Amino acid sequence: MAALVTEANGRTVERDLAPFAAGPIVAIGAALVALLMAFAGRYGYHRDELYFLAAGRHLAWGYPDQPPFVPLVARLLGPAHSVAVLRIPAALAAAAITVVGGLSARELGAGRAAQIFTAATLAVGAVVVGSGHTLSAATLGFLTWALLVWLVLRILRTGEERLWLVVGVVAGIGLLDTDLVLFLMAGIAVGALVSGPRKILLSPFLWIGGGIAALMWSPYLLWQASHGWPQLAVSRSIAAGHSGSSTPRWLVVPEQLVLLSPWLAAVWVTGLIRLFRDHALRWARCIGVAYVFLAVVFVATAERPTTWPACTPCSSPPAPSRRCGGCDRAVRQCVARC
Image 1 (cartoon, rainbow, N blue to C red):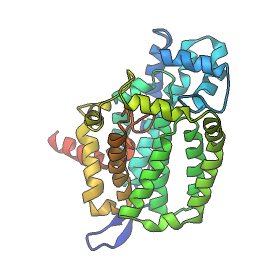
Image 2 (cartoon, helix red, strand yellow):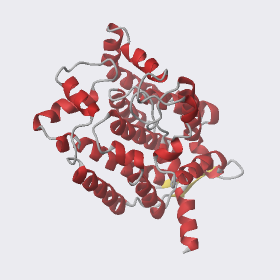
Image 3 (tube, rainbow, N blue to C red):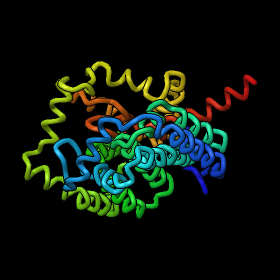
Image 4 (cartoon, helix red, strand yellow):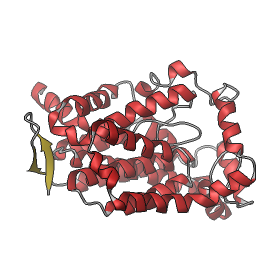
C-alpha cells in the first residue's frame, strides 16, 4: 500500500504506508469497552435514555427533535430492562472510534507508533469516554463522522471512486441518527472546492452515493415536512439559549480545546495546522478546510459543540483525521526526550 505525498515542487508521488497496528489498536478499543461496561450499571438511566425508551414505544420515521435511529435501538434493547444492556451500543461505538482513528492516521502516512498514539488519545478523550457511557445520538454520530472522514481520506489517497457508494450508505445511516452528518458532507465539498482536489466532485459515484444517502434519509424528511418541521423549531430554541444544552456563540470554538482534553489539544491543533502547511498532506487539505467551514457555520448558527460529529443540534470536528496529523510529530518528540 502507498501513501500520496505532495513534494515542495507540487509533484505528487507515492510512498509505502506503514502496516496497520491492528493488534494494539484493537486491544485499546477492547479495553475501552471493558472499562465502559464495568461502570455502565453503576447508576440509573440518563434522562435522554428514558426519552429514547419512551420514543421507542411509539416508533416513527421522525420525532420533533431527532431522527429515528436511537429510539429504534432503544426499542430493540429495552425489553432487557437493563441499563447496562442499553449502553452496549454506545460502548462499542466508542471503541470503534478508536480503531477508525488509527485507520485515518495510517491513511495520512502515520507509522505504527503514531497510529497507536492516535487510538490511545481517542480512548482517553473526555468526549469519547463520556458519550460512550450512555446511549445517545452523540456517540453513534461521532462514529459516523469518523467513518466518513476515513473513507474520504481513503478515496483521496487511492482514487477508488466506488468507495463513494459506501460513503453514501454510511451517511444515510448517520442521517437517520443525526442531521449534522449533512454539515460534514457539505464541509468536505466546500473543502474540495477551495483547496482541491476538485475532480472528486465530478465523480458519478459521488453523486450516486449522495443519491443513496438522500433516499435513505427521505422518510425522515417526509415526516418532518408533514409535521411542520419541528426539528427546526427545536434547533432555533436551543440556539437562542432556551435550553440547558445551549452554548454561547463565543464558546463554540474554545470549547473544542477541552472536549477531548486540554492536555491533548496541542496534538489535534498541530495536526490541523499541518494539514494547511505540510505540502506532503496537501491532497488531504480539504479536511482542514472542512473544519474551518464547520466552525464558521456553528458559530453563526450558535449550535452546541458537543462533538462536531454528533448530537443535536451541534457537534465536534472530524477529530480523528486532524488529530493523527500531529501524532507522528508528537511521538518523535517524546522519543527524542527519553
